[in-house]
Amino acid sequence: MLKTILRARTLMAAMVMALPALAFDADAPIVLPRGDQVFEPLNPMIAMAGAWGNRGEGAHGTFGTFEPNFTTPLHTHSGAYHGVVIEGTMTNPFAGEANPPEMEAGSYWYVPANAVHATACVSNTPCRFYFHADKAFDFVTHE
Image 1 (cartoon, rainbow, N blue to C red):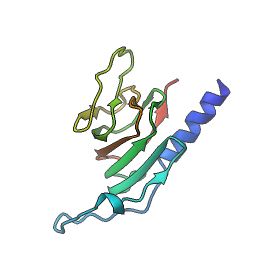
Image 2 (tube, rainbow, N blue to C red):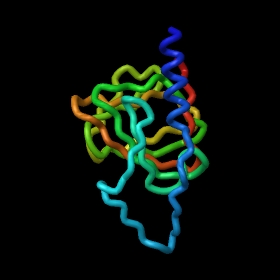
Image 3 (spheres, rainbow, N blue to C red):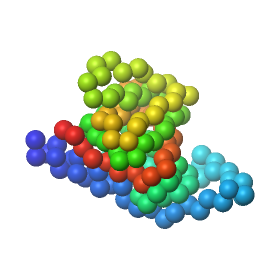
Image 4 (spheres, rainbow, N blue to C red):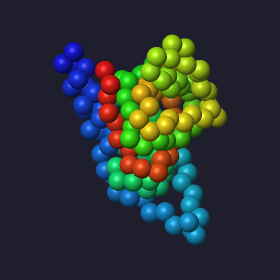
């Protein structure tokens, strides 16, 4: 139990770490090729790269990767977010949901603020996704 609590606290602290803001100018075009995305490892299973904004301070767009067969603990975020699977197969089970639909590349999901859920890479290959939100990203475990 203590190991689970410590792992969850480490995950939470890493996921909300503030990064330098990536300036966004609605009047200026932006191109961010895949090879130019800089992924920050948050722990051995998760890495994130900013597309725009600062996930630790406010509105943002963020790329994420999960290692194969990885599931986060049940958790909430104080702000809603939208996600899109880019590679791999993911699920996003909400509390009490026994058989969440599998989402392959091109799938979309939405999590309302404070909805208890997990996010998982259920494929044998890494999962890559994009998510965006109007509020800073936080992560509160519910195990």
